[in-house]
Length: 183
Image 1 (cartoon, rainbow, N blue to C red):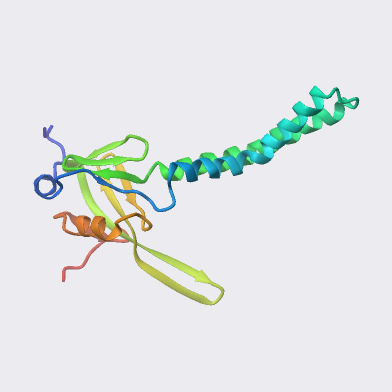
Image 2 (image 1 turned 135 degrees about the horizontal axis):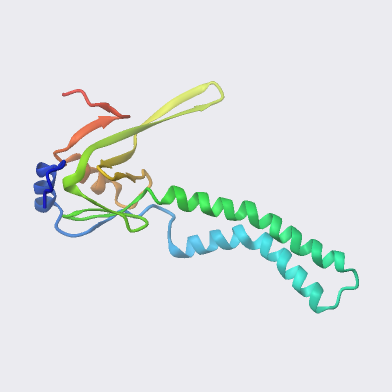
């Protein structure tokens, strides 16, 4: 199993003892119906222009410029909508889907084994609204592996259980990239 590279045996042993079943990391408000509705709303404007163009074409519109304009506006509004959908998929690719005794599965099928876990990074979110600033400690957890990182977002179902599981792991811990001071 170990090919001479980095191997984190304490975390592998811990995972085999403490993770019996697959632990799903399900973000809140991310149901399949919700995503379908979101993409439908996102693409309804370009779709409306294309439908308008097709209806005008079917009814035999006298002014061909109107049909062409409907298709052109449909195409032009499709570009930002497609870009928004692409950015959403790009952001979602780094999220964890599940944890099991062998490792972590990412949203797009990536697989990260516990033996290649370098450290766990607790990320704090800093925000500023007008003259008021603040921070949310432990906003998200990043599991940094040899082949990349997986993010466990803050708004997930059964957050306390997942966080407790990650906090019990015998791995190096960092806060915003800096090694955590010993208690």
